[in-house]
Image 1 (cartoon, rainbow, N blue to C red):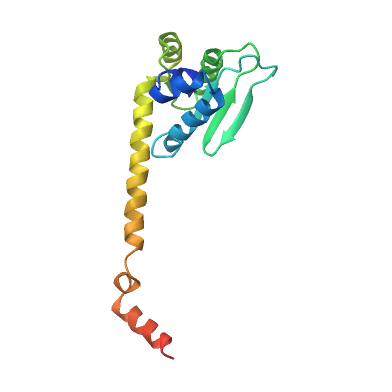
Image 2 (spheres, helix red, strand yellow):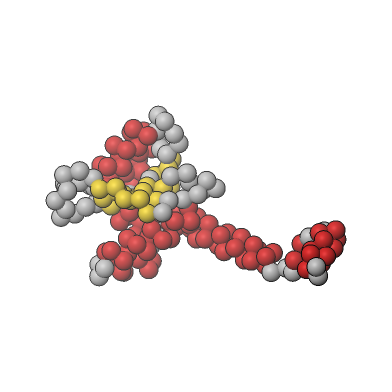
Length: 165
């Protein structure tokens, strides 16, 4: 579970963007975190944003690829949403909370959540992206080998026989 705006404000590039274009800053954060939404990292990634000025009486939940994005209801902070969600989720599963807000980290760890500071989570996201790039490059290089190198001698002989019939 991620304190969205808190993480944006701890991000070097996105923190400057949020004042001019909050939508772009949110989308940038979600793009960076998408690599963490996998079984190798976290089974479920939930990013919570305050819905300041919203008229919504209930939280709005959107699914963006493998990330759940929550915009809190009017008058509710991301912190209070995260605290309540952690209280419900901890008995069922292991919960990690990413925030640089010491008070939120303290409260959620009291419920049994594992705290992660924003910078560490962003570093993990960068490492996951690099790993994905390496894997894609490795797969790309494997697929460039000629067919003759990937099949047995007998299969090549059968293919040649079919080709010249």
